[in-house]
Length: 74
Image (cartoon, rainbow, N blue to C red):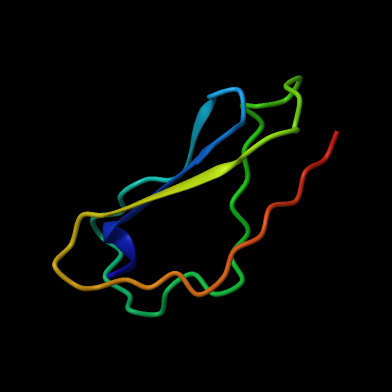
């Protein structure tokens, strides 16, 4: 269920940005293929360092991360 997934991006400076919140009415099994998730919470920070993607699955079905990429502007 797509609505059971939460996604956060954590910058090298520790800023934690929610990219996707729980969506209780989204029961689609289609996933997020090609969906862009965006944030501006880390603007002004140095992009150098380790970026972390934190994913929570609040449902009872297994989820799989097949690929992800990070594109920075600024």
